[in-house]
Image 1 (cartoon, helix red, strand yellow):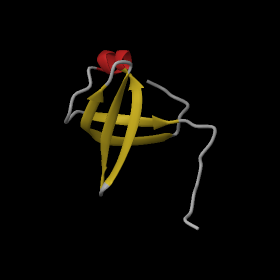
Image 2 (cartoon, one colour):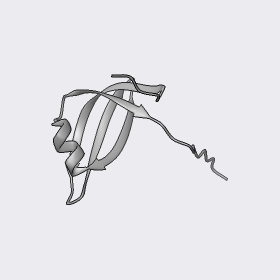
Image 3 (cartoon, one colour):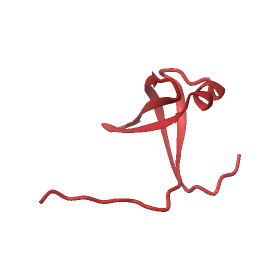
Length: 70
């Protein structure tokens, strides 16, 4: 598989929270880092995601928002 997204993070699925339309996927990236993605239930089913599964997260975004405390 070749993708244009260069931001690729490997991790392990820690939790899946399935809703009616979307599934929240919590992924442990190691070293205390986690990322959460919300994908459609259909996508989660097609990927056959399960807790403990090794996955790769691909990030392709046109905007990144940075914030600081006042």
